Length: 375
Image 1: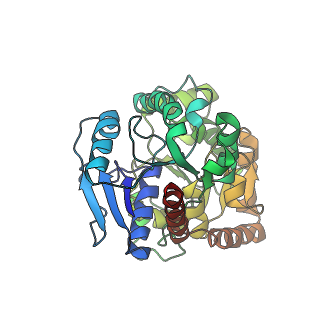
Image 2: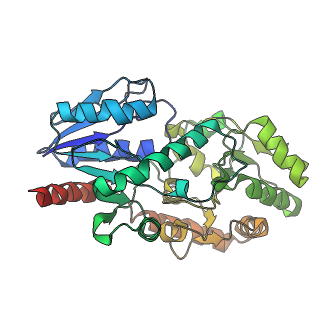
Image 3: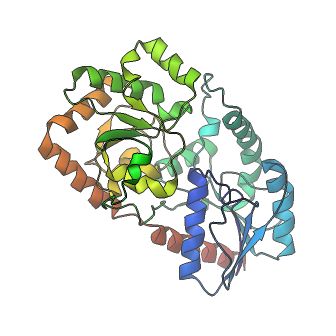
């Protein structure tokens, strides 16, 4: 088989969720499959995080914009290299392409009601692009992959995709996310003392940053320990708006926002945290949920969308629309040592069910099945 894989953004320095997924899939396929030929199409960037091997060829395509790269440069290159199948990994694909397509549709959030408070130009442009492209490519896809049973049923119901054209393949997590000693105190690049709450919030409304900060404010009022909150950076105006709307000025001196956290430092951030807050309103999978669990840190997560499926029935599942429930879960972890230790064990056991190796094996089986049915 000659398999093409779209991995446009994996060479950029500041990667996001979908970038890491395809990067790990490629690395695992390099390990497990030496028979088929792979052509991985990427945009040039400063982080050359994967190299060509005997049967895996990294093909750099230079094009000024995401849409032009995907709609013009990608299908042209796939045809040039005579690929038998093209796997597009990030929700969209070329509209005009006569090569059999496999699409990873991580979610269909772009078809759900839009939060009018989201003023991010990048996120809004991506939302419009997906709404334009996805409906035009679905019928052309030989198989549509998604990453949880929740999302699979959601796609079938809302888009009317026949069940036999859908596939569910779980994501994994990197094996360096595990309990480990931070001998070099790497976490201190971001926060002075261990034992903090960690939250990967941002301006995307689905990340539930505002309610989580309200919950943290209430935690500070009730806790004797008053742990710091480490989180990704927020624009000052955005943070000030949350503080002023909710009257939670008490969080200012306790919140630490160091900016972008390098992925290789994240295991040490998790390991030195007291607990991880993964309180999103909606996730199609949620790799950080597994990363935290695999590091042995208790995770407070939501009882919505895919999070109960990935976190398991024994996880700390809260209603993300209730700041009070988030607060009470934080306080219970702090005040109940038995419960705290139980949750560490729950997370470690649950994470053991997922791996990138399993993901790649299932992906290879799917490729073989799609091409077998083409014959």
